[in-house]
Image (cartoon, rainbow, N blue to C red):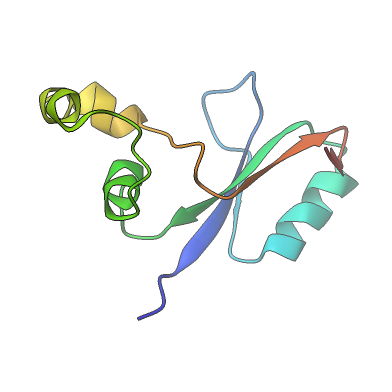
Length: 95
């Protein structure tokens, strides 16, 4: 079964996403057109990032520490993984 994904663009100085796209090329064209600086990251739909990372063995935390951290809503809600496909942009151009 193919997992549906979206591409999410974030700047480093905002807590909110600037755009969410189904298509990578559309996202990249928007970034370039607007000369944006930030990160475009591929996220699975209908799945939390931590759940995705556990399923793909990309958590990077020892199992006993992960078990403890998984009690924290802040940890679960704010989890990110450098293993997710992502690209950095500077003034609209990919680094």
